Image 1 (tube, helix red, strand yellow):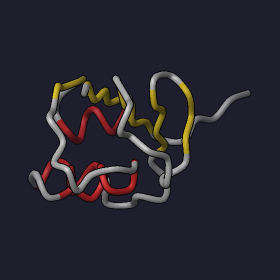
Image 2: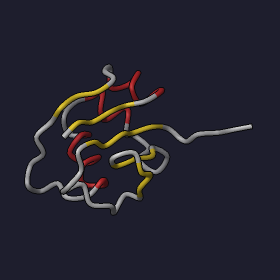
Image 3: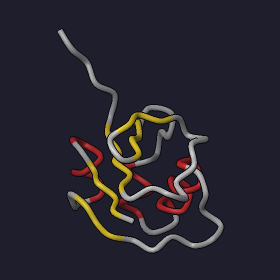
Length: 83
């Protein structure tokens, strides 16, 4: 699965994207975030406030309980503002 990071999430993780093989225990976006946080300080920092980081699965915005089992790509980004 490809993970893509945008804006300050990218800056904190230190990379724009990566390909990962998820453990069988990861089935939702929330599981994925918890797993990522266990991969190192940079991920812990990027996801320190899980409630504000948004996710999209295959270019569709999703909630933390969304399944990642069939996903090709999961993107993470901070809240967006417009004007």
